[in-house]
Image 1 (cartoon, rainbow, N blue to C red):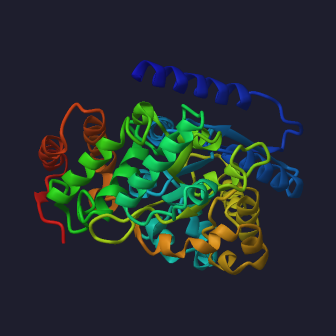
Image 2: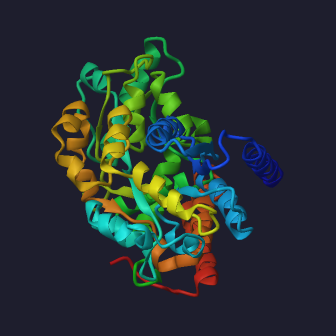
Length: 432
């Protein structure tokens, strides 16, 4: 894996330098490069927006370059580029959990007009992106985990969207058995993100929090993960593997889950909002046959959705920080966020768009997400700060060991508790 990561990184850097050596027309052209995600049509949307920006600013050349889907691989790329003070990359698209980790490498957007437009966005996201009184990023889209369900199959088997994990398991079993008997031997009840990466942290946090198992580490810096409710929920999830979920679900990422679901081989899927528009694409096997709802609730009777989202920041090593900031603001503007939401299902961070009649008419599912967003759970990136990446890695490796049967949940979480104490220096506490 490390060798593959290093090779991929070298190829990326080589590509960057090859592109930067090309002549783009007039000598006074300014070239700005953004590193974009690769999930779904993310890069396509950036390229489309770049074309609109260049039409308005013919003196600027915008390049969009894709990076790996897995966020920890993306973070590794970013850290190597930023620590080397690379000036070839101007704008970075990065995860909601990274501001405190990367802030020293980004310009203060308040100096380029950020303070004037900050009130347009959700307050919590602006606060998340403000580190040491410096606005280091503008929120591009907000995410939360959703339950996707085949509405046609629920109707076929006289079932309702599940509100609890018990109900999901029973419905998944019924539909899976029925569809296999009708000839689809590849059909499974429930797909999700089970590979060893940040996506598993998000999924597992939702399971645990919905079952009164806490948030791994509390906001007051107490390690709470080793508790009976968390243990019970992870043991339950391990039972899904090979029963209602494919044996290989422990290798699934967002896109693998989505592709599996989109060809019609699953009754339920946990994923982010971006998968909604793709599932309704013209060539999708499930177009018009599915809907979304909050994820199931566990012991506490409430669903949980991990808060996600991606931000845009401008590198302090950019040779054109003013242009980079202007382009960044353009990408995250209300007009461009509306375009993204209309063409896909990325949820806007501009508040007024949630009252936009045209958008709601075009994407009515957005109006169904209120209950999802009021039940979001944040990953413990704030209390852990620079240690978050290591904390999350330890967590998802521990969860993965449970899912693959290498350890039972009680053993895994007991060891995880000790590991987190060493990493953070925090004391053990109880779930409140």
